[in-house]
Image (tube, rainbow, N blue to C red; front, side, top):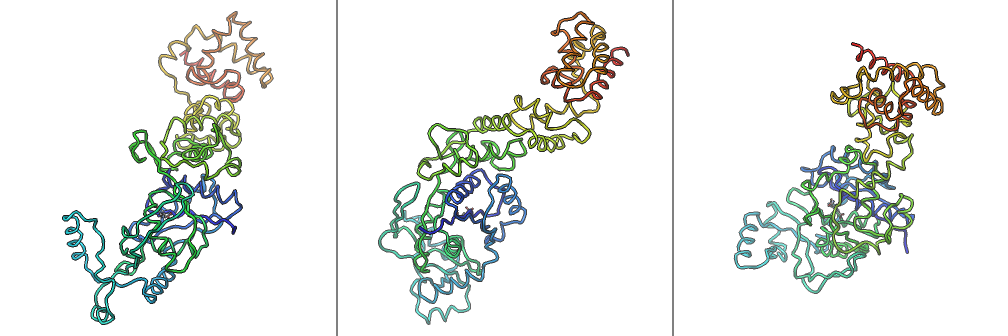
Length: 469
Ligand code: GLU
């Protein structure tokens, strides 16, 4: 068995879609598991619709997901000479032909076929033109068509779907080179997959119908035919093809919404693949366990709640240093500069159990970094009143004097309870409000410790002057 060579071949006409990312991931996992090669090929032959912006967006999304390639990115737009040469080869060998039918003629034929209830297909007008006919047409624009074998069947053993057989009579002579000289998808994909030595083509099942045509091209060009695996589609909850109606479909939109790449990877792999009842997989586990044998044949339904659940899991169990560095970016997106505030990793530790996304975490972390806290009016009326003045005064004293670690802080609160004669229940909530602006912050000792002595004293002083003023 030769070394496994697989690829991801996106068309750069938009962002990296969830479905594309899953295809890329499956290919990546297959390559890593077999210690094979993962190739990235940008299919930008459609010059009108391909943009550099989209190439960048796709590359960014792949690198965010951790799907590094071993070869590439290759650009089809750099390879036009090769495609031309291969078209020429087929023309010379009589396996392709120039077709001069105008689009008006073709439209008229198509309409006639549809009117009589036939499948619209090219009728072969130019398929067997004699040399003189070609000479006569020498100055006319032409496309190049592939001479499809009209008899028999084309069959392949799909690694996911099993044997798929097409009746060749269904396939008409498709265009492999347009009248402007540019080659078409079904042709270049074969030349590239073959020239790049791919032995497994793993892609979305929207390409199943292209496969018999492509197989005939492999054969005509004398290339070995690779194996194929077509991954079923992803559907929305209404069982329609996943689209924006069902929520974000762009990989990077999930980053912007505060998802971790490992959550998305873990989620995507389970869209189609299963391993018993297991749900949580690290990339290393996936590389070890992934198998096409356990990719289902039917479409999978996108479930945003499950993705959120996985994200919550990865936030809860993530390394605080790493999440802290990310948190800083999400705070910045909310207009908060974390530079002069508490250590983000320490902040993360107080919020890991209470945040489903990094956006939510940044919202909850904002109070740590704000210079001026914004108090909710109702909360203020309830908790920041002259009645609480003695609490804040006592706390101000105790926190200025205590050893500033967890035990020291706990001790400082004891001093406050003794001095005010109040139970902790009466002290904790007003303090939480004074220091965080609201009632739902993490544990008060943690908040005090992470905020640091300076900020605590500053906030208590501000609250006292508000109460007094
Ligand atoms: N470029 C094609 C697409 O974006 C994929 C081609 C293939 O995987 O064969 O759909």
